[in-house]
Image 1 (cartoon, rainbow, N blue to C red):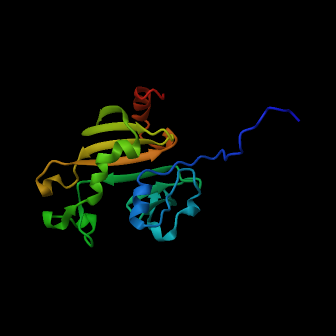
Image 2: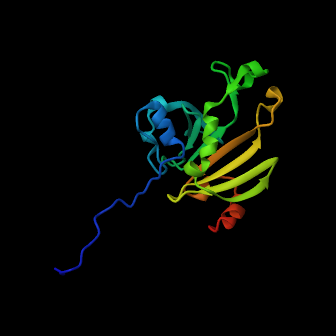
Image 3: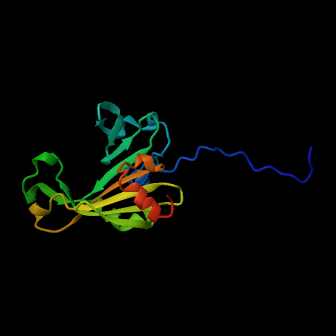
Length: 193
């Protein structure tokens, strides 16, 4: 027995950061429960699953949550989340494909979260022109990185207004962000590649 040497308390090596926007959605639901990256997909409550999504030829390794967040878990563990913020969304009961006039739309209350991206996703560390808009990378201290694609608003012609739609793809490992043509450049600009 060595005197004067103490060991640190035991801690789990499996750090699973909370997915972006989950704390906000948990507050809205009032249940205080949120999903984490690297967590087992079986922990997703059935009542939160809105639809099964297809990944190529595979059905069942991606789901759409009730909050319109797509979650990807190719090997049973959550590795990616993706959501979109448009200023306008279809009114309740009107499918996206049926929107043909301004009266079918309402302002998206979640669009206000865009103003909190620095707090929720971390500060922007790289930005590049991409397609018909911009791509930005944000990396939080907990290791979650988010690729934010900024494009023209989906319903701009109907609302006769220029808005921005933000598509946020988040993961702990860059390989799960997708868009491997863009990610190396952004990671390099952020000092992580």
